[in-house]
Length: 287
Image (tube, rainbow, N blue to C red):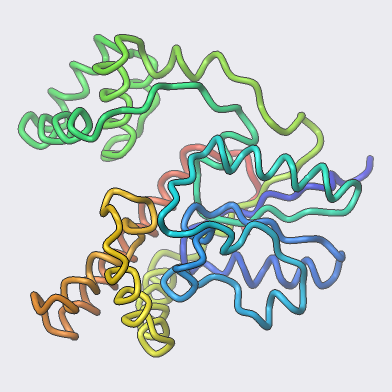
């Protein structure tokens, strides 16, 4: 049986998935296609550790740095762009690489056409979770979406809030929405692997990455974003490190505190990604 031409390489930030993709592409001649929601933005090369110009010269990369920070790319828009790329590449091997779990869900399970959830609804649900505690909150969710309450792991705040927000806002369970989906990639056309390093090593890599970002000009990158006076709700403005480093640039924190806060935010983000991939891709190969 021939090897599927599409390989999905997922993993948390600072896990080494981009380096693995480079090594595999060099051996196979594959094209690397971005599956990271923040690496789409041209304004975030340093903060998102986007592939370097040298890497892009060595191996063909697509969908990296193609969007302006003033744009708000949705999962649907990314999905359409990926399908266009796959059609353009024909029979060439492809490595889809990134840390955005929802992107991989869209490819392998399909994406429900769920209405956008207003920020105030999500914020209210998050406040309720904090006030009630997970046990009471989960009991309420079970009355609205029993499948989600049973499926979501203990402590997975992000998914609990998402499920409750959808049920509250749409009057329909998230599980019902997601049951009516079609995968974008046909079964048998792809294989998936997750880069899952030891947690202590991953956190050390996160801290090292932040140090390297500062040396490469992360503060200048954030300063340039702030000078554009963009809507803080835009995805690019929510990238890990933007808020933390902006606090220093506005005089609210010291350089050391800003760097420490960015390291902590990066570790927290990596932890959430690890949890997501562990729960959502249990049958993928681990590296």
